[in-house]
Image (cartoon, rainbow, N blue to C red; front, side, top):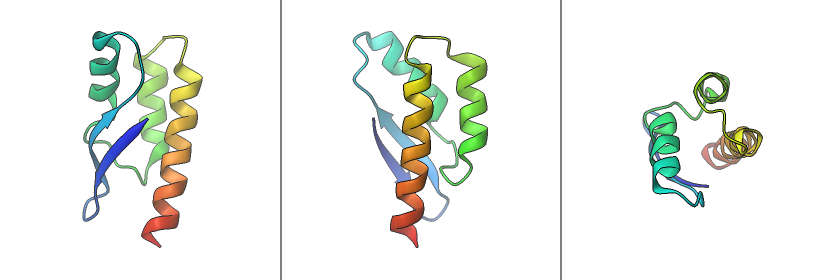
Length: 75
């Protein structure tokens, strides 16, 4: 997963992933865009509620890793 984050607001501006289908990539993008990277719990809840694909756990891991990396870089 790759993302672009607005540093002032911590909002995710864009995201991309390696899903095969464009429909899946677009849906994942809709889940992530405008989410606050400093509040991964809310984004994880959104993923658990709306995305039931086989890569749900991988997306949650990606969110946690991205939030951790962002905290390290922003500190």
